Amino acid sequence: MKDHTHPEEDPVLRRMIMELSPGERVAMACGMFSEAKALVRAGIVSECGGKEPADLKRRIFLRFYGSDFEAAELKKILLHLGLD
Image 1 (cartoon, one colour):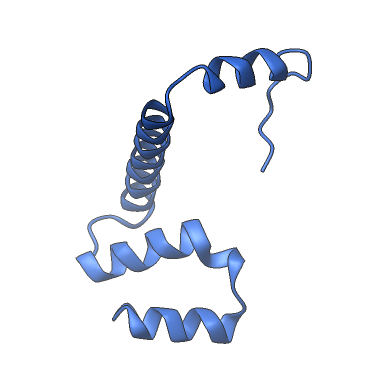
Image 2 (cartoon, one colour; image 1 turned 30 degrees about the vertical axis):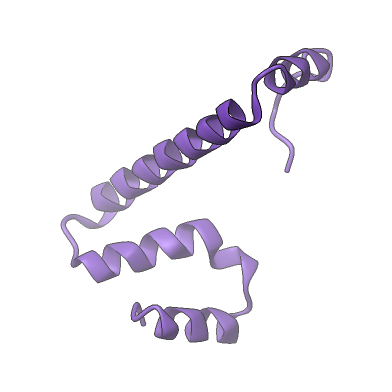
């Protein structure tokens, strides 16, 4: 996955990240995922209002992973998670 970092700044950013310890990099990645999930959740609540927790989980899952699977596969995953 590629972000929109300017090509000239990419090596600098990569060097700065690689200077962090592995634990610091994991903590940063976990923090970024938590923030992304909070933003997605807020967007879904804003679009749809207050929904049932299962519906909110389903919509969050689909927002993050919906384009990674074929429709039949998604249906099986959602069924397995109890989010069908």
